[in-house]
Length: 100
Image 1 (cartoon, helix red, strand yellow):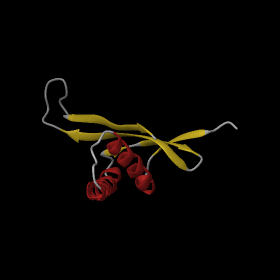
Image 2 (tube, rainbow, N blue to C red; image 1 turned 180 degrees about the vertical axis):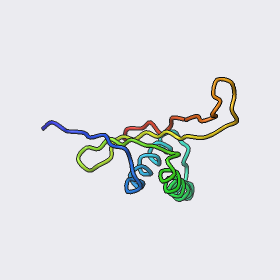
Image 3 (cartoon, rainbow, N blue to C red; image 1 turned 45 degrees about the vertical axis):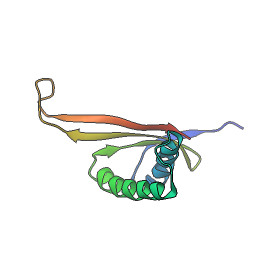
Image 4 (tube, rainbow, N blue to C red; image 1 turned 90 degrees about the vertical axis):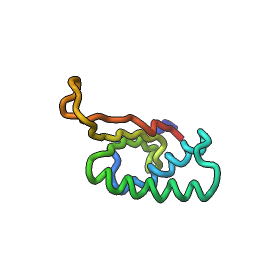
């Protein structure tokens, strides 16, 4: 049977699925060692995503196989002091590229 995937911009309702893959990524690269660390990451990331997705400072796209999220990415936008090549100071950081 052929699997069909969809790719959509993540919303607040996708936060738990984004966190699930982020935790898997951090465990894979040994950034999370204990259950306590995992709980800290989950709590902090949930707070971050609720705020930053709403403020459009974090954008994520998720790939789904039916209803299950199988891949995620993220872009975090931020401002820094202007410089000649970027007089507005707006920059972005690509992160969380992960497929579970």
